[in-house]
Image (cartoon, rainbow, N blue to C red; front, top):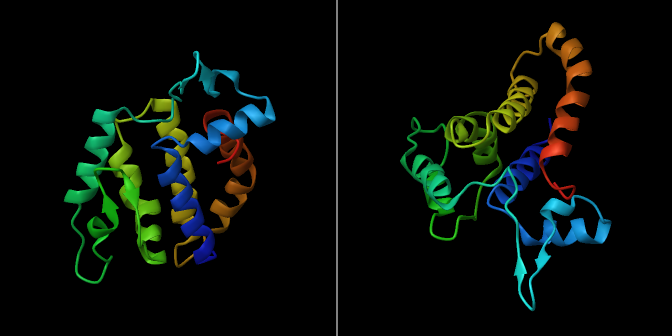
Length: 164
């Protein structure tokens, strides 16, 4: 699997979960998902929270989990350095860091912080990446994923903004 693809997916997930304004503006342009579009309230705009976004306290919990994560020497770089917890921004992630985050760290960190249906969908998505990136591909897995991936993608489309 392409390292660039994994990095793009990882960065997209990390950028979507904290809530992005551009995705909301795109929804208005596409005239879809009215419940997520910016709401005009007399000169200012209210941004309704999506079910996929974390509250401030849960976001802090997630960032604390990431900052406290420990890895064996040589397994991953210092991911904590790439996270600015105050503004919840990532910078300087290497491709292998995204690989580790996407397959192991994010699923563990989000457990219990999101609605169950959203977490389960993301867990299925992360499991797909973990299996595809393993050293040996199982033929049964590939056959099963051929039918399951369209369903996982449909679930993701119902949860996240179209931009994602």
